[in-house]
Length: 108
Image (cartoon, rainbow, N blue to C red; front, side, top):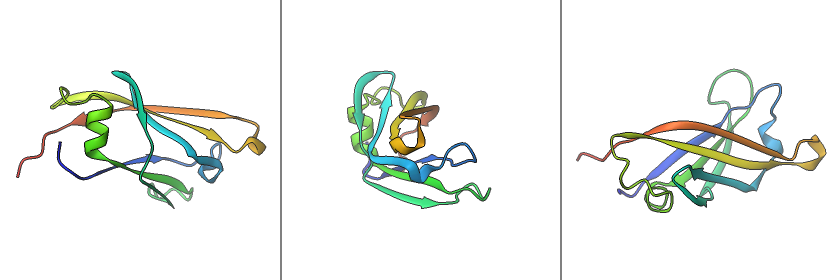
């Protein structure tokens, strides 16, 4: 429940130009709840060093734990998903990606 930030990345490829993602449509959700949250900020960089631009999103960790009902998931994996819309000029309208994250308590 510490204050902090969580980064979530969408990796670009020859099939996905992340600059075509409509950032106002991005939402992070979890199978545990219908709630979702929007990123605090966005950045474009090649974090995977593969030559493709990636989208880096920053989320508030406290808001993520509370709104996505992750309070009881400490030391467990939680299924998260990112949904977004692409610029309509690309032909595709919606994208979704998912993955597991391990929720660990902060030890200080």
